[in-house]
Length: 167
Image 1 (tube, rainbow, N blue to C red):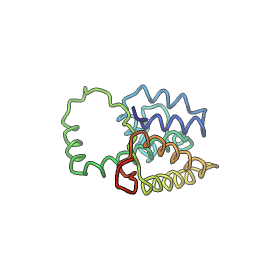
Image 2 (image 1 turned 60 degrees about the vertical axis):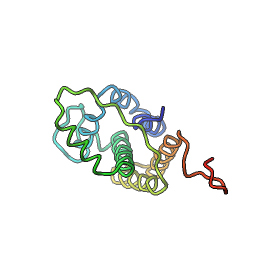
Image 3 (image 1 turned 90 degrees about the vertical axis):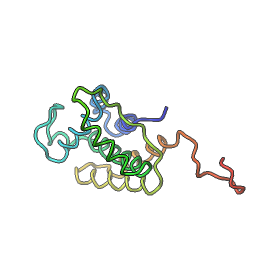
Image 4 (image 1 turned 90 degrees about the horizontal axis):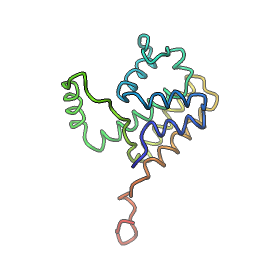
């Protein structure tokens, strides 16, 4: 089984903000879709959030930053791989489901190419600097390293020897 978004977040938090580990563990028990929506709302200056912490607290934490950037990168990679039309249709169908639907589990991390990883690094670094983190470079490097490891769990079709055979 491949690593999930929360696995990546947990590993980065263990290294850069171990005091937030309990928060990540608590989020793992909730509906992932709800967690992302509410974290996004709180991080963007939305109204008071039912997760139990406000905007000032969110801005000072590493977990929301890493969670949102990793989630966005994974969604973008999946959208690029499956086509945006399929994703729009799935989103529209999801809105038609009854509100008593099953909780959503965190998605698995897809394989990200160098451009996608570079984009993630830039995004994490920019957000970390904006929020005043002292080690923005280290945080960005950790997120990218963990994503590269998470996405490497399955054989890569682009690895070929000189005869064109997949290794």
